[in-house]
Amino acid sequence: MSGEHGGSDEATVGPSVGSNLADVLDDGGRRAGLTGWLESIVVDIPSAWRRRIGGGAVAGIGAILASVPLYHFYRHTASVDALLGDALPLVFGFVLLGTGAWLGWLGDDDMAPLVAAFWVTVGSLVTTGVALYFLSLHAAHGHVVESPWFLVYDMSATGAVAGLLISRYDVRSRRRHRRLSQRERQLRAVFEGTLDALVITDDEGQYVAANPAAAELFGLSQAELVGKRMDDFARETTDADDRWETVLDEGEARGEFELVSAAGERRTVAFAATANVLPGRHLSALRDVTAQVEHERELGRERARVEFLNRLLRHNVLNGMNLVLAKLDALEPVVADERRDDLTVARDRSEEIVDLVQTARRLATDVSAGGTERTIDVRDPLTDAVEDVRSTYAEATVDCDLPDDAVWVRADGMLETVFDHLLTNAVEHNDAPVRVAVAVTVDAETVTVTVADDGDGIPPERRSQLFEEGEFTHTRDWGGFGLSIVHALVQEYDGRVWSTPNEPSGTVFHVELDRVHGPRSTDGYGREYGEE
Image (cartoon, rainbow, N blue to C red; front, side):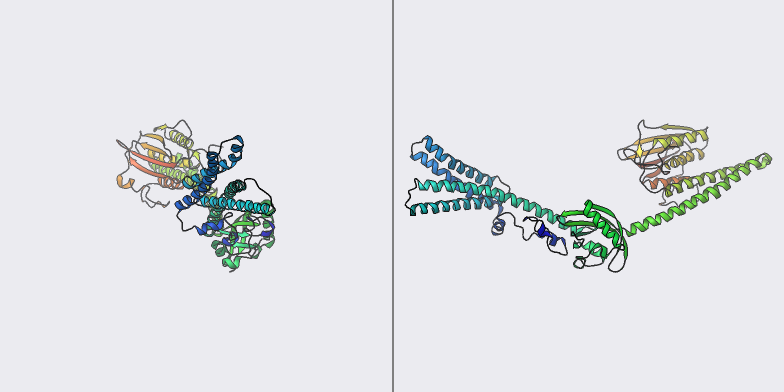
């Protein structure tokens, strides 16, 4: 099929079938310019000497050509006719002299001077030979030619400059060939070394080249894979044919299909195909996504189980606890005074269980909603949490210092739960009246929220155990679930949480989150934060 495209440069990019990219990009028939053979002859000559020899030869020929009219001016009286007759060869001589000097001492291409010297010499010799041939014909027929040697000189000068122009084309061709060869070497390195499977097909859909990753994916050697077609491995051949037609018609295609390897193993493969990366050659990148697809299916099953747990908590546990609270309220008027403390403890514990169940429901909702990246303005959940604590614990003083501008962090709507637990912990575990100070520190890459109270503080041995667990296990035999939930949520946001002693008394909790520069999506409920 390569012969249909014509042209010497394209004729070598559509070769016969081979097992690797070197066969497809075989440049054995492509020469580096008109004098590609010259480099192999002078390969042992140092680069500096190549420039000197080539530049010196061009400059020498130019000096010889320029010296003739200059000698003529010196020996004969200068006239307008003499000046006009010798001006062009003189200019040619100086052009060659200057070009040779530049090639030999200022140029950065070590082969260009030799190529120029070759073509200038050839041009000068050929035109000199032609001139002598025609002079001999005239002499044989008895014709008299006036100033024959000046005619030979003019022809030789013209041929030398013509050779210089040809060398310019030759050097450009060599540079284009060099750049193309570098690209091909880079492409070969990527093709052979990439971890993704890459195959090149012809217009009929047959593989003409494959890299090692493709051979591993299909379960065949590279040589065995060449000549095969996609429908030899696809379960649905009709779909494979349709996809191939789409690639040819639209120039590219992406998707997934189920591949059956030579050993009979079924794999889910994602592909990206691009048509005519070379004339009549089409590139396809294949990636085995079987594990990823199975992982997504497992995540779907896990979300279904979490959703079931969510419904169980809502319909059974939460409704049951609400009924318990209602019964406790009904019993309050008839409970004896000496048992009212027991009633208060039962109500408080029941309310804690309701709060814990609601937090678990929110966590389950966040998991079942998916794991897409979300962002939120940290001021919104922090403000809501502060207002909730102020309204619930009127005896506590909560000071909140927030930035004037939006501060976006990588988190979701569950961030309010983090702040709510920290604020509630600061108020409930200290004797009234307690003062809590909330502050936000914004750095280039992170945002840190601090919650500081002036209570009794946490003993050092317990403070070191607060956030040491890597997972949500809550193996401590003291304290509630609140700080464990805080730790688990902050870890989900790839953040950090820790505590330090406050001065002169109390505890400071620090929550560090990654800063982002603007909103990116929705919160854990699939909606913008604050939307009803």
